[in-house]
Length: 370
Image (tube, rainbow, N blue to C red; front, side):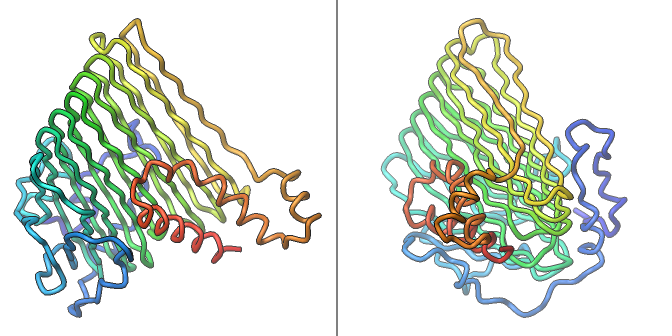
């Protein structure tokens, strides 16, 4: 397909569209005018120590065989999802294709994409057969005047289990992601995202629990300062009986950053005995920052247990005073309390090394601003 050369050519919905009213992707314009750096970066420094398994390296939307160790994971070209405007742009893009059966055991798979400038599109497909299990860690590193656009399609059969962890790091740029997940009977999908270094971010996730007893969690952390804008839109759709879901998001907004979260739980009439929870909490480090939260419940079944809550506040003055009375410096006190505030959103990561890496990323961000 012919990729757009101007921001207006993308045809993205404006702020009058309810799901896009908090999105600011204006930095894409600089990426469309920029070119990628011809030098191939060494992505090994972005790998998580202690994690074994396949390694796939992408640079500016192109697969790097030299820096990869696929171990059976294939690279294919995508057709894209014509129904979604951002996914549509991934038509003809490369991406990792994972198809696992119950007899296959996959160690944590690391995908690293480094954007050096310009636009880059990826499309990953993850299909797990009955009783299959897999863990995937995706690290996206952006440079100024770069745009990484990712589409992810997931399908989990009976009793399959998938853990997906995403890190957005780097020095700037734009990150957009569209995820579609189908979760079958007794299957489990756990997704955790950490957003730090990017000028603009929009992530849109839709998990459909179409099997009896299916489970999904869409958790994450947003850490923004300066004039960063992050927008996360989650939808978990319960379409079958006995399903359960969780959404746990924690945000820290500093300077003039704008962090937004819109999460919806949909329960169909046939989805009796659904158990769904949503917890959205944010800290304002400066009152010049902005946090937007929009939790929603849409329930058509009678026998359900659904709850949601959203809070925005500041660090406890009593807790800060207590730590100060014990001789802890103010900057250290703020970092300690903020680290504790973020821990809930990382609790579902199964591998210790991955959870520790994301915790270190978050702590590093906090300490840099202390």
